[in-house]
Length: 65
Image 1 (cartoon, rainbow, N blue to C red):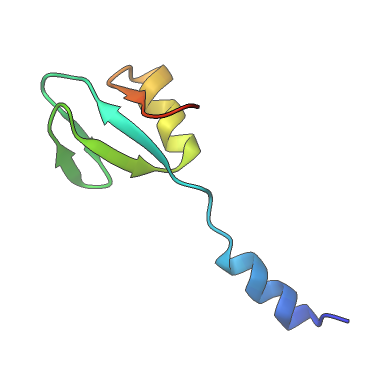
Image 2 (cartoon, one colour):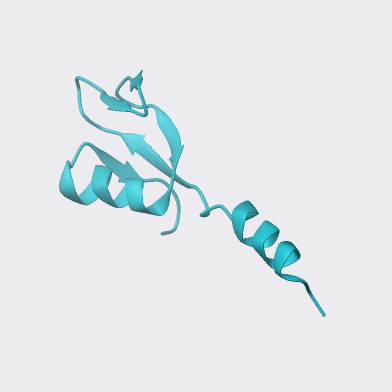
């Protein structure tokens, strides 16, 4: 049987799966303090990808999703 400490450690290590986003804005996009040029493929969380693609409309998803 797992202990509370083991379960807590497992929860801390779980990171959201990263998705690739291609920057399409001519002026680029600043993400997490780094300026990315147009055409750059960056790995971001699904939540950040949604903001970049749907809200800000400065990028597009790369791949099947």
